[in-house]
Image 1 (cartoon, rainbow, N blue to C red):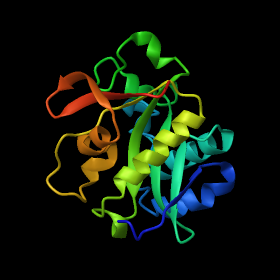
Image 2 (image 1 turned 120 degrees about the horizontal axis):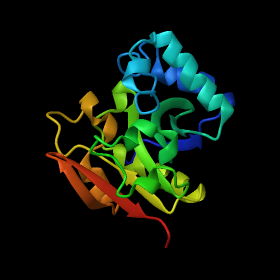
Image 3 (image 1 turned 180 degrees about the vertical axis):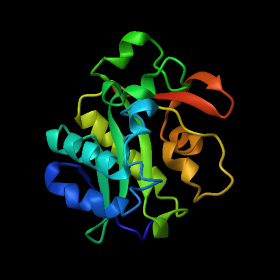
Length: 196
C-alpha cells in the first residue's frame, strides 16, 4: 500500500476524459455511471448506459465537482462520489438506511455524503480505500462541509467485492466516523464532524 503513490483532483469538465477512461465501456459497474443515487429507479431503469453516461457528463460539466478522481502515475485509477447530500437525492430517500437524521439535512449545504467508491480492478484489495476516504474528507472540508455522512457495509465476502462501492464500515471507523443510526442489519449511518 505505501509504495503506491496516489494524487487526487476534483472532477471537472476538463477531466471528463479521465473519468470516462476509468469507468470504461461498462460504466464502472453494470452501466451505472454513478447515477444510482442521483435519479430514481423509475427514471434510470429506463435509460440506456449511454444515456446515464451523458447524464453524469452533463452533471460534471455543470459543476461544482460531484467527487474526486484518484491518479497513480498519471493514470486515473479511483473515483469517490462526495458532495452535499442534496446532490444525491436517492441517498436521502425516506425508506433508505442512508436517509438523514433530520429531514432538513437533505437540503443543508453543510451536510455532505461520501456515497460511492470505484477503484480500478488491479488496485483493489490493496488497502487503498483508507487513502481514498482521507482524500474525500479533505475535499469535503475544503468545500465547507460541517458534517460528512456515509452508509457503508459491515462485511463483504471478499475485499475485491463490487458491493464495497459504498465502502466498508472498517475504513470509516478508522477515519473517525461514528455511528449515528442503524436502520438495517449490516448497514450503519455514520457521520464525521468536520467543524473542528
